Image 1 (cartoon, rainbow, N blue to C red):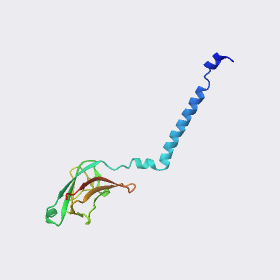
Image 2: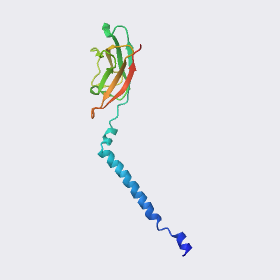
Image 3: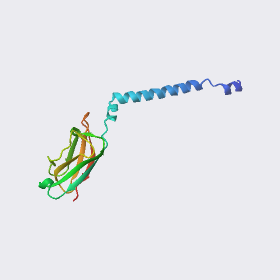
Image 4: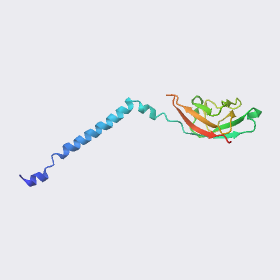
Length: 147
């Protein structure tokens, strides 16, 4: 047995590295194809919009002398939103009543404001965005009325 030949022989290194690279490429391809086949790739681009809202609660008898407390919700900044994808919800016993004197246009941008009546003290009011592509919802703003 020749010890010098044994120590300088490196024929097995190249096939081992080649097999490791082929396995890694196969795993990466399987993960990418599996993501799109299962539909997970579609959900990545359907994130809730980034927008900021402020809530102003008033307890002086309602908007323009109406009954109940009310809340003014103002779009403070961020993305312009489509009115058909937004809903204002409250968790109180009474349903929030949209005040007809205030409107959000089809495209809601910074500075736009809307008002709702029948807000109970301690009630949480949420602006909820509904994904037009899949029906999933996300709360993009929330505030609680003072007690």
